[in-house]
Image (cartoon, rainbow, N blue to C red; front, top):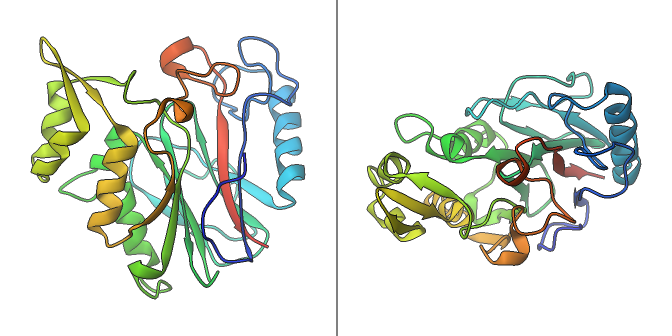
Length: 249
């Protein structure tokens, strides 16, 4: 999948789907995660194929649902622990693996830098109002020329028809943003359906980033709803990972 957004000519992005790899069920077939029980040799070949499509070097982070940010360089190793990354170097792809969480890609309109973030609900909320998107924006401060010049793309994730959460999740979002209540639909018995891309859009807009393309919460973007295209941990429990990447060419 090629993200549709108004990025600069030198900014490239790609989001993999589950077809096109060598892994066998339940990881079939282009599983890019090396932490889910798949055969290492299969993951290595899948990552080689992914990099070949990109014609860039994807850096695969160790994502922990936190809000740590790393600046990528040519020698940044795979497995670096962080949930967001950015770079100004060409040929290095900021890469986020997901199987229900939301990948968010960012780029400066003039192509000076690119960035990516792994956004589950824990990462979005963060601590004391600073989640993974806020932490990434703080890290970008030395190179960013202003939020109005940033382009964002939201990739596939668990859809609002399937993301069931407890009242405690709703409460942590609404504690600092009462308007976030609109992103939750009551199911009864203290359960809600959460709209993860809508929550991410609110966090980006609060930073001043309003040029947001991609996932609008409709079924076509839902990982749970489309087993032929997307891995989903919520749906399958044992699942591979697909990835979204952005890089400067």
